[in-house]
Length: 108
Image 1: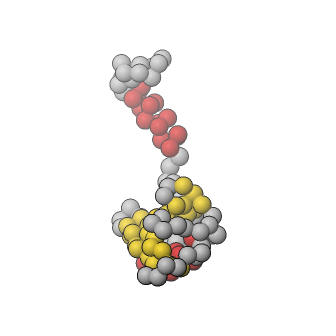
Image 2: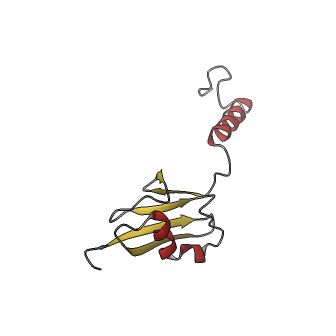
Image 3: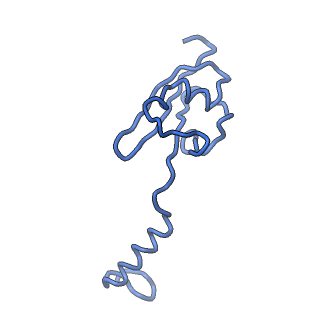
């Protein structure tokens, strides 16, 4: 690795398998170019960077952003369920089963 190269990671996961690949890239390489250099799209052909969001260390970013040494680029899948709606359903079920107070939502 030369002074102009940096080491980063590219991460992607499905419910069945996950991949965390270490990649050495030139400084000034964009997130999109780093993902391509990692070869992760060959492992997971369903990755479509025009549709899926990406991030660096759990913060969304643009494909044109430049990663720094030690960064982890993450490719995010869409959510299966709306978290607020799932919480609302669990709370209603708890109320119906008598495990929660119907007025305050607290423990019965």
